[in-house]
Image 1 (cartoon, rainbow, N blue to C red):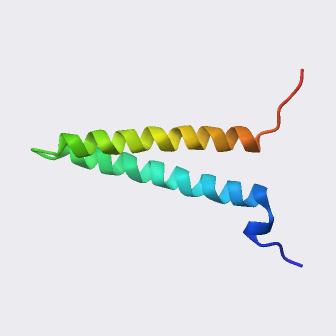
Image 2 (cartoon, one colour):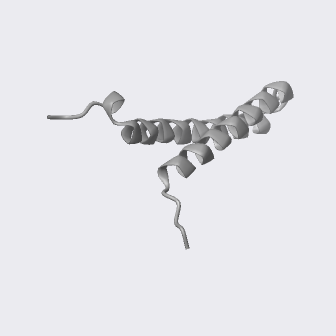
Length: 72
């Protein structure tokens, strides 16, 4: 029996984490391209950077959820 992603919360979180990391990398490229353009849209750059920070927070949250706490 093969479990689907919806049946396994850990697999679903890992899939979301992977998707978010890819989106974060894509935003890096988009921000770099906009910043290197002559007359680039600074408002758009700010929006992309804000989205990137939101993604970073979500990525950190998911990584914390997937990493077990170590009691020392």
